[in-house]
Image 1 (cartoon, rainbow, N blue to C red):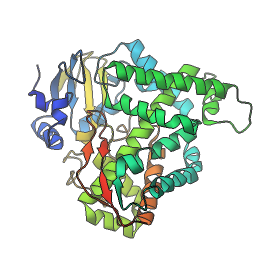
Image 2: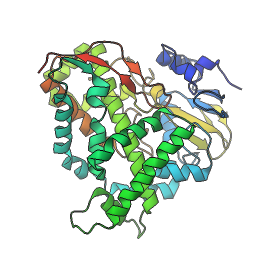
Image 3: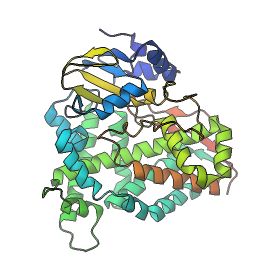
Length: 406
C-alpha cells in the first residue's frame, strides 16, 4: 500500500515538479524512517512496476549501503524492475555483489589509482582554463551549457583514449542515458556507448607500446589470475563515462548556485582557497548530492528502523534526503565550510560500492573552482537555475551567470 499521494512519491515526475522536494523529504524523515511507494505507470516508467521501500534518514541509508549481504545490488541498482541477466549485461560491476563485485573492483583499483588521477592534474587544469577562456570576454553566459557542460567529459575521454571527434556524441548519449528511464531511447543510448567502447577495447588489445593506455592496463590487470573480459571493460567504460560526465558537471553547477545562496562561504573560500578547498568540495558534494538514489534488493526477511522488509523487496536509498538529515548535520540545508560532521553519503555511504571515481571528481572540482575564481573572480548567478527533470541525477540544464569580461 502506498503511503502517500502521487506528488509525495519520489519515483514519479509529479514529485520533481514540486517547488519543495527537499521539504517533502524532510516531512518524510519527520514522519518515519521508511516509506512504501508504488511504481505507477508514468512518462518515466511506461510499464509501471513493483513498489518499493524508500529509506530517507542518514543512519538507515548508511546501514543499507554497507550491508550487501542483506541488501544486494545483484538484482539491479535502478528503481525499475529488470532481469538479473539484463542488469548484469548493462550494469556490470554496479549490479554485482559479494566476491564477484570485490574481484572486479580490485582489478579496477589497480589501474584507477590516486597516482593515475594525480598524473591528470595538468590535463584537468588545461581543460578548465579552456572552458573558462571561451566565455571570459563575453561578460555573461550559461554556466552549464557554455562552461561546465563538456569539462569533465574531456577529462574522462582523455583518460579512456576517446578521440576528440567522438566526444560530443558521447556527451549527448550520456545525457539521454541519465535523464531517461525505462524507454527505448535509454536502451539504445547505453547500447551505443557499450558498442563504441568495445571498439576502443579491441584497439587497445592490439596495442604494443610500453606506455600502455588506461584501457590496455585494464585488459592486462588481473587478480588471482583472472582478468576482466572485453565486454566487462566496455560496460565499465560506459559507467565511468556516464558517471564522470554528469555527476561532476552537476556538482560544479550546483556548487556555483550554492555559492550564490551562501555568499559568506564563497568569500571565505576565495580568501583562503587552498586551505578550504578540500572541505569546501566535500560540503558542496553533500549539499548538491549529484546522484539522488540507488536501489538494493532484500536477500532475506529483515527490517529497517523497525519496518519489516520481506525477502525480494526493493529498497531505495535516497542519498539526497540522507545528506540533508538534521539528525546527522546541524543546519543541514545550509552550505557551511566549517562543518566537522562525519562523511556525507553522496559517494555511496562508505559501503562496498563506494564511488570508484571519487578521487577524480574531487580533483576536477578543486582545480576548476581555483581557475574560475582566478580568471573570473566576480562571477555571479544572474537568474534562476533550470533543473534537469530526473529522480536520479540532481542536474542543472541551465544556470545564467554574469561577470566582468576578462
